[in-house]
Image (cartoon, rainbow, N blue to C red; front, side):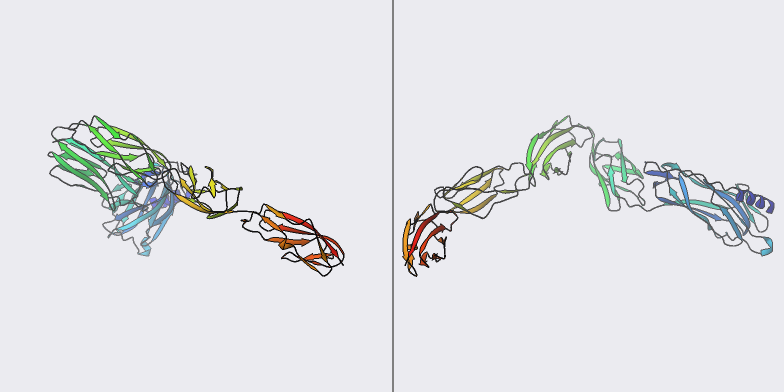
Length: 503
């Protein structure tokens, strides 16, 4: 036996060619020894061996598919010498030898995990890992495994995959109508397919009406008597249901209509759709509702549609009897104005114009049309475009309102100012040196109801005549100077007077 071991070791060490690993395909899952796993994930293979007595040597090989990449290999060494080569693509050759003179042996009598190997799944499809034991010899020379033939060993192989949580659970049918005494099939889908711990539990809400027998994701329903029952499949916190109606005679839905067939709904508002089934004596009258775009509009199990965002969506009602009859309604969701604002105050001169700008939110509102009104059109009027015209001195409130039915309003207080139209001064005047002349008493500002009649007084030659802020001219020395009075209300009206200073 030692010669066969020695020859095996010679071959083992000579084989050292490493093949180039393939790359993972776009398919997401693979099956390794009947275990579904994710491409790119890892699987762990274990081989357990139990021998009837202590062993002095063993040899074998672990084979694996090209779609797997070996990442780790552990050979349990309870005693003696073990040797293995992991550089060969697709196989790991191993051997163990406990020389007689050492007095040692391999004790696998209580069962031991002889091999633990970890693989990365690099390709989709069917992959496999298999251990081939060639020789296991007892310390008394008894062959427990003789050149690939199991004489008296117990062995087992297991594959464990990465842990992936269940994300969703669904059934291929939400409703069924079945004749009494007949059977129907249901299939559950676990997502992702490679989820671990996906143990499914099937139940019937009324087993006197429908019974259920399941094999993992496939279930057979048997209709016992007329009535209704709900079949539920569950996995952890996830579940899916199918409503089953059992009848001696099944009348399928032949037509289905929705009312209204089209509707416009504002964002956050609702619209009830009514489904009418024919014939009226159909066995199952329930319908299943769905939306083509839940980001635009949602629909409840009662057919109540709610606008979510601006756009269009198709609402579908489908008969639950399995007939496939369905009807649709086109829903247009509009975005109303949610806020409207305008300047809180505005000042405008008589006969002048200023434009008020309204801010509408959101910017994608369907109808941004507005109406403008004035509380006192004799003081200030406003156009359909928000242009305010001052008519006479006073105040008025301008109100802007949306036209889309959202009833949003905003107000602006407008003050109409009467500006100065004309300033008049005597063209000439005289004053003595060091004498004073009050031109403020001689100036005339029109109209008399001007809001701001204050004036700014200036002298062109202050070395001859200077003027105070109140319009009082003081003669400085002999000569003449031009005194100007200018309005301070922004109207830019002014008048001039040539003042002659005499001794």
